[in-house]
Length: 275
Image (cartoon, one colour):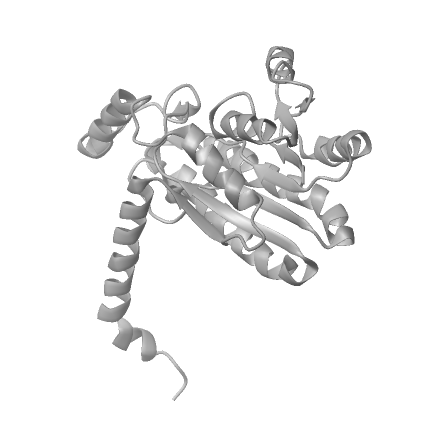
């Protein structure tokens, strides 16, 4: 049965790949874009493609936009929070405004989208919310503290939300991609200026390697889109979905490291209860 998807950020990357996969499968897609050129480009994909001019940081505009989509296309079956970007920078060298902007896009916009679709989903006792987080919502690398903070936040929100709405027939999945051939490490990344020499050995090689590998990552966005579409249409979807061999490897390493640390300090942890 054809469904209606609402996907944020469909001009490129995962959002565009998923929109194209859903359209090819016969579904309708309302996709958010931020300018007229992207609007025309998206709607050129076919009659099922409906572009919506919306900046997810304009949270006051989100509920009216969702209401307009529902009045024109009917109920939204699947919300995909894809819009986001990466901030690369040493924490001490990055401003508080950088941090606020990262959370405005990656977290606050996503939550506002969820709040806008939940009333209808709750009424119908049906719906699926996919939040595209990152393997960086579980494991971390130096130089991405703001980005990791935003993705850890969206991971926690997704998991808790899933428990809140499960008995209401609404499903929630956090999608955690590894490195894919999108614009994330290229034009979609904001890089803080360097100013403190003590961090040169930590961040400079990582920044250089990330820029060199942009467009050469192991992950295929089209294959990721097919995997996400499969989950979106599943009657029993997972709460978490890793995408990519690097995501599986790095998250597995993180979980083993965390378990080892928990075991090593278990005695101290247990010593704090009231006698």
